[in-house]
Length: 166
Image (tube, rainbow, N blue to C red):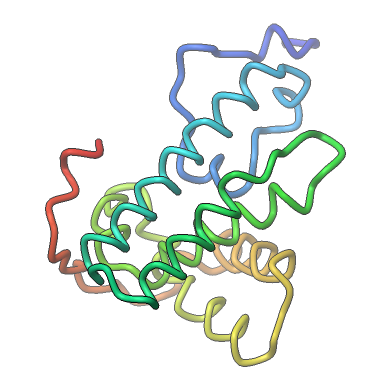
């Protein structure tokens, strides 16, 4: 049985969707390159969301404001001492997955349980004014506990081509 972080590390493996919003398994968190890789991939997805907003909603003031807010959160620098930044980025990622059919379509194969849980956790987040921490934690807990019990969701319909971002 492996006993060190290096024995658990798999540098060639792409992070799963679950690892993007939960983080690495504890035995791999001592490997800074693995965490940087997840940060880079999450950043790429958030850049994709920023681009998607422009494609879907045009050059309106609301669209510009939304893109600006995504860019501000995306540009926040995260380190091991700043867990708030990590949570903000994960909450933004989960929010985009909950509300944008194109993001849901892009992750449709790996997000089946998550897309069943997100309508409930996102609604609770907005209705009750929860913090990003609570939104992410609530989503993780609901997915782990109940993902198989929610009815299947219909395939999301995306209005733009997202295959070029893969």
